[in-house]
Image (cartoon, rainbow, N blue to C red; front, side):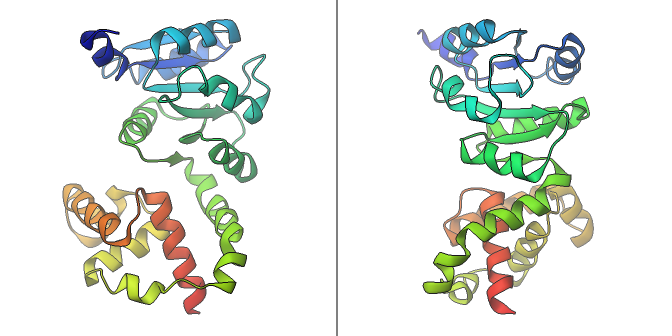
Length: 227
């Protein structure tokens, strides 16, 4: 692949859904920022993954031949570096957890506002995870429960790790643990979103974390152990 082709594929979004209206809705919020390609059936999806090597795949779980969440790893094989965002008409925490466990980087509703979908894609492109707001709290609770047995026997020294943070960073970390967005944090603390992002970068570095979901899990576990 040429350097020019690599640069193009680094920003390509592939949309896979059997519903024309859904594909059109998702495309409408992305076309100004990304080259967008569409697939209406499984064979077109497989061909697109193999040939385009897209940065992002928006994958409708209702796509015939996919087999639901369990079919995601087979799709991923054709382009291991593609970040997959799963879309569904009825998001729920159990399916959301299963999606993350098979390697999806996002889990959203079919009816997501196109502008918000664009934001989700941009977040995932940066290496973070995006899940629907109504799924976040129960999903976080279920993810935390998976680690409780290990932490019960070998509780991490959470207090020492949090001592690395400044008071403002600890405040932001707690807000992330509650599911707040950067915009909500900025408004609550009367700071800019750019400042929030700078604080998050410092928090991730100090705690050895890579994304906000990991931070939310860390904070939730800290609050549970500290009770």
